[in-house]
Amino acid sequence: MTIKQLLAMGEKVLANRYGVGPEARMLLAYVLGAGDSYLLAHGEEEVAAAPHTTYLAYLQRAQRGEPIPYILGAAPFFDLRLKVTPAVLIPRPETEQLVELVMAWAKRRPQPDLHLVDVGTGSGCIAITLARKLPQTHITAIDVSPAALAVAQENARTYGVAQQIDFYEGDLLTPLTRPISLIVANLPYVTDGEWTQLDDGVKSYEPELALRGGQDGLTVVRRLLEQAKTRLLPSGAIFLEIGWQQGAAAVTLAQQLFPEATGESLPDYAGHDRFVYIQL
Image (cartoon, rainbow, N blue to C red; front, side, top):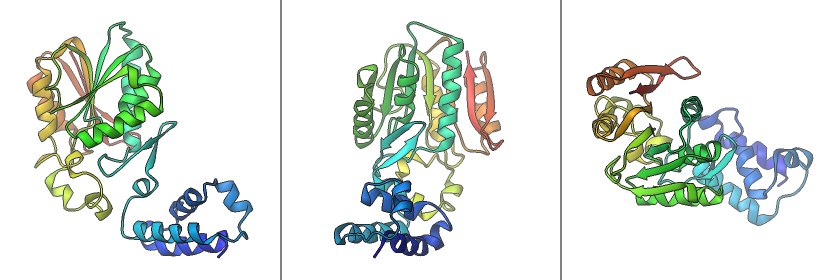
């Protein structure tokens, strides 16, 4: 079959799951090691048996609901292409905004000894991006999953920032003893009720450990803030990504645990509460 025929077939196979989208094209481009422009310019080119067979296998996986980044083994984040496996959450666009908020805070308050901690690092997307954008900042990345840490460390080596980031396996802040200037975290925040309604492609393939946040979605966030009370430096700050309906509850929690601090929820680009900012 030709490239054009395979694309048409792939789009038809994936139509029920993705509608009209780039997924079939992404898979074929990956199999052929080519870009979109090549696919367009060589639509009548016959595809050899081996890539043809591989493409069909990838289509079947995608049709069953396996996320495209897991099939490709990589996901975009800012200008990076990070390795992802089912051990880590696939980076979301909202988390890019979280990183932007942290960068803006760090640039307003330049500190030569800034100690930034990324809790629940997963693929390392937050820590690695911040290491590249804030080259004078020392970063600690923590995750409870050794498999996730292995992925994050490989991504850090790929982008040349492994020497700037210390990786620790552990439960939230428990591996650390030194004071912390800035905490950033995208922790599990899906409520038990929301979990039952998630797409099967998320529930069946992405790590439940990185998604489920208990009855109100704030179980893990609550534990992090309780630990942060004794570890955060005066004038330190915390940035959290939260569920879009959790803004008021998360701010109330922050005010209870940090009564002398300023706490506020911040919207994402869609206008939904998505982040909590705590400033001592």
